[in-house]
Image (cartoon, rainbow over all chains, first blue to last red; front, top):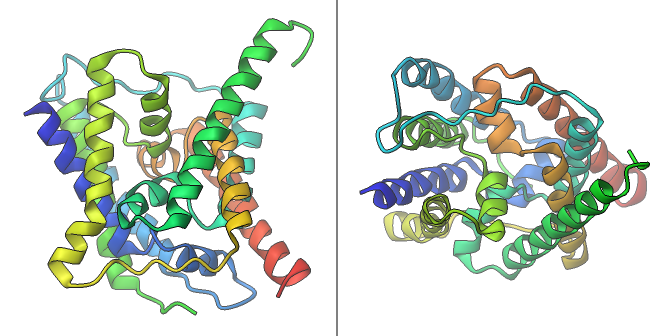
Length: 144
Length: 142
């Protein structure tokens, strides 16, 4: 039941990504192209998601525990630092270059389009590179 | 050229928000594509890993279900080169790792909880994405 529930939730997310246009790099890039063929649709995606998630989280998080787990796992870090801002900034540059974000690209894998496969493969490589850099930084105390 | 689609985009966004709320209600987790993928390649606890694998399986099945339901694949058009896809993918992977999330984790889930961290991250990646497209489409290319 636990895994079936997760599968269905992933499916709902993926259908949302597919119908909203987040799966489509052309649409994503046109959203960012205010000076060109601007397509403001993706602002409505964020609006729709928040319109459900803000009240939905309110209702859910007053409960004692989630259905299948002993407790809610919420991020406890409140730290706003250079890593957060520059990492997110770097993500935005990659998003603006390719037109895929992680949530758009994972459902896109299901279309078997080579661009989606290549994007996810290189994103995984990027995750490994970041992990290597973090391990290196942890070993040399002088570096920031 | 893509067409302005406020209604389907809003409806699709609502499904994304619904998935986030359901994952919290049933599994107590933030729905972040970054966390799902990085957790899968990290391995670790089998219970967490299987949850992420099931979420990913659902996501990957979605376009096929759209095809079954509507007779068409969801629109997916790639206006950039394969080099841009691969280079962009690398930057996205490194960036979300340091930034601790992406459009789903920070942009939807974190912002829905009014997390200052997520609001900061969202402003940062939206700003650089707008700037990047301006540079690639109007300063370099065209």
